[in-house]
Length: 166
Image 1 (cartoon, helix red, strand yellow):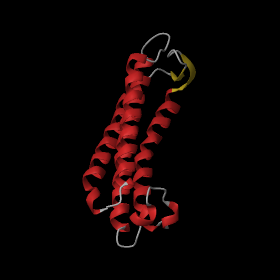
Image 2 (cartoon, rainbow, N blue to C red; image 1 turned 90 degrees about the vertical axis):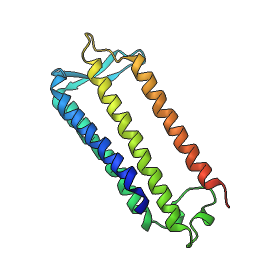
Image 3 (cartoon, one colour; image 1 turned 60 degrees about the horizontal axis):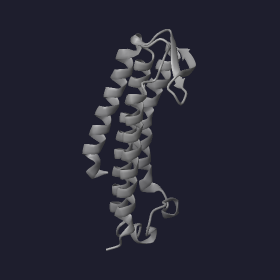
Image 4 (tube, rainbow, N blue to C red; image 1 turned 180 degrees about the horizontal axis):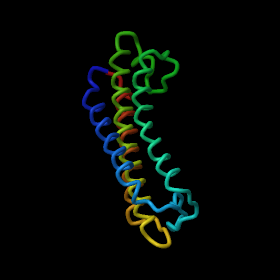
């Protein structure tokens, strides 16, 4: 994990920013908050402001899960890992470096998740500013597309990294 300082720092800053966003903007939510939206963006499920805020605040634990996985991986047996050429990459002489690479990848995925969660929260605020509550699809679809594109790119980088044996 010695090479993970920068990704962990970025993840910590993103998480702090997300937490500040939720805490700072919670009063902007109405008493009855639309939290689920149909295919056209129309609200179809509501809850109260405190439950909504609690839910989004709880999601700040997501990055902790990614970091915990990155740390725990150092003690997991090789059979738990599902990666191309596992026997080669987890051979004793390469295991530490391989686990560090996977850990760093997990932390970057955590960053992507926090950005996505912040976007979803922002869109929840925007949706609840209209009457009736309406998810702004012109913002949601690009957010979802960016998240999916980021996940695909992350996956390709991960698979390509371990598919080739020097």
